[in-house]
Length: 59
Image (cartoon, rainbow, N blue to C red; front, side):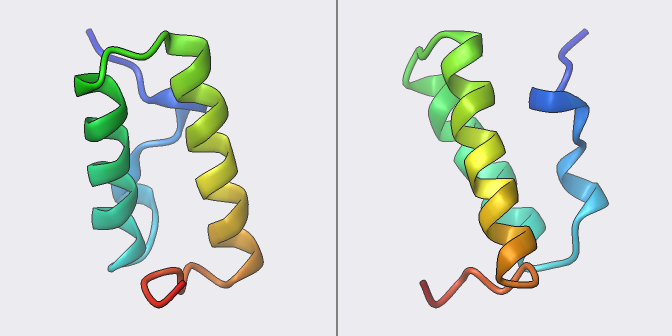
């Protein structure tokens, strides 16, 4: 069973952040990065989402 990085399910976030976050996770996994690296990158995106009120599409 796949667990999401940091235990955060992408569907827990508002759209369109949720779809961007899900896509980001998929790209990291397909790239073959180590789980700790994926977790660190995902944590950074979540923190950016929190800071910008999940409005990161135009960044």
